[in-house]
Amino acid sequence: MRKQSGPEVFRITGARQGLADDVRGRQRRYIISMSVRTVSVVLAATLWNVERHVAVVALALGVLLPYVAVVIANAGRENAPSLPSTFVPAPMRPALGTAPAAAPAEPAAEPGPTGRGTGTRPAD
Image 1: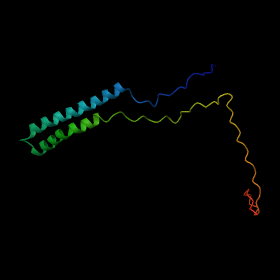
Image 2: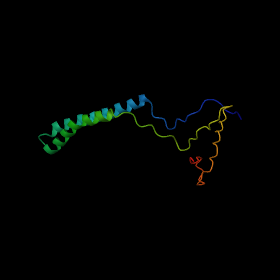
Image 3: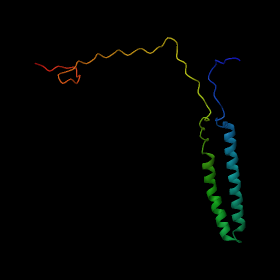
């Protein structure tokens, strides 16, 4: 079996969708909502003299839907999902010849007159 010692490999299972797919999806949602708006305005005009309450609701939907469609279309891309729980990062290998230097030992404090080890003596 061959040992791989190349660059770190990343998993793409948690990658976001491509920019072209994201734009295509937003365009599709916008066209669908504008189609619903067109149908509701035509329905409002058709039903105005027949069923006024339904026509008013359809007209309100036709007025509010463009705002909602633009907000949805401009919402931006989805959040990047976190890495899968099975992801195991590569272990870090220490560099050669960089052993940590030992810290210098602190001098022991002399016991004072009270025996607490303050390291100072009272003046005579």
